[in-house]
Image 1 (cartoon, helix red, strand yellow):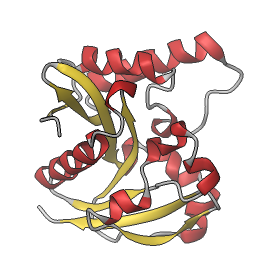
Image 2 (image 1 turned 120 degrees about the vertical axis):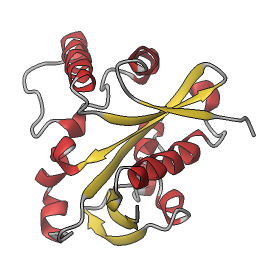
Image 3 (image 1 turned 180 degrees about the vertical axis):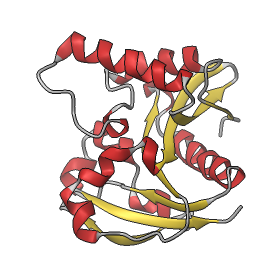
Length: 193
């Protein structure tokens, strides 16, 4: 297995994130950072808006991610952050039905992963997940949620694997809370500081 290193997303690592995001397709991991979708915009304009908004959030320190490197080359990322940074989850019907409670604990979310095609199947996501959990621990811990795909049909499509798999999270101690429709499942773990 390749030896990987990690760095947090920030102004100094943003160019590395950008290098990967250009391969990812245009989302720039903005979907969950918005309360509502950008309506009436598609294609290149949608990509430009996402890029602009992601860069602004990174500059303000309101976009967390772990970047994974092989040597000096960025090869993947895991987006995570506190719930106020990733508010779109709260709008989901399945999430509202579950009405998950977290009391006084800080709530963190792990929303997506991206791995450069040349490094897929080499443990990059697993490495990124462990690093994200360690970062959350170092930032005071709390309840960590994930939303992996359980639909076999959707899991067969590479883009849907960006949310991780239940097994990947179970190996890190996450437990299933309940279904989020027929495609995803809500999983949780408590991380102590």
